[in-house]
Length: 361
Image (cartoon, rainbow, N blue to C red; front, side, top):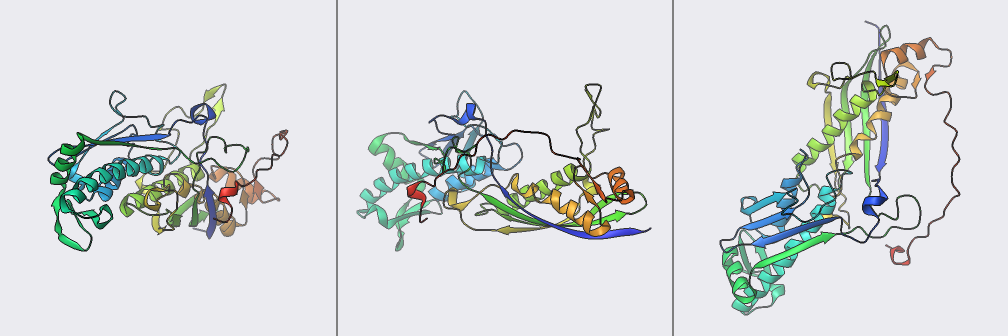
């Protein structure tokens, strides 16, 4: 069967957007509460909900890392509005970054209480102590220390229940441009994608057998979860690029169910090669950044570029359907897409100045 084959490449940077009605105030965006019990258990309460992205694990892992305990020692309660402190939601690729920062802050506070109690018992400086393997020990004499449970008991004798809260509010951004006032984007993510396509010149069908995707994650707290997030973004992007379409007829959606509104299945999933680039962002928890939506962005233009590379036609709108491919191949302009952009009057340009404290960083 006559075919065209091509590769397409695209890069993206990801910037979170937000509604000012939710964000435009001085309240924290994420909050976490910790409470330690006498047998060494840690109760972690957070309003963020895990919707399949693995945020429950990440929150527990961050607290476990700071306190030197195991994941099995963390009792997690999330998204119970009767019990948990506020979190603004699992969207905009924000939970690991913002709730993770709040969890890290809370864990560091309770660790300080434990270190103070242990330092008194061991007659050493707080700075000499580290927490690891369910123990709090002297840095240069690891045999000299106490179990985590013993440390909790000492701290409770000294000051009562060992508890702390942590919160995160993004820093003020550079100036009064759209999005800056709400501060939803304290870090940027970057992605690059290469897509291979097979195009049937008779039917116009486009298939994607292989994808290479690299994502700047800052730090991968759990690399397996990050790879799953990135590959899920690729899968979602291919649905947007080739199948999913919002079309209305007589005021009603033309595709009322998933029988008509097509999305990829496991049979359409390509071979994916995922590369995690760690850059250690100064604002994220242990340097981590988002991995939920950023990897989606370069895949769609990469598919369009690959189709152009294979067939020499430009499809300027998605989804890239067989009908559009065949139309572009029969059209002298070799292009299919909107004839023009909608008329829109842009507001006056606002120039933003970088804050003095940011200069030189």
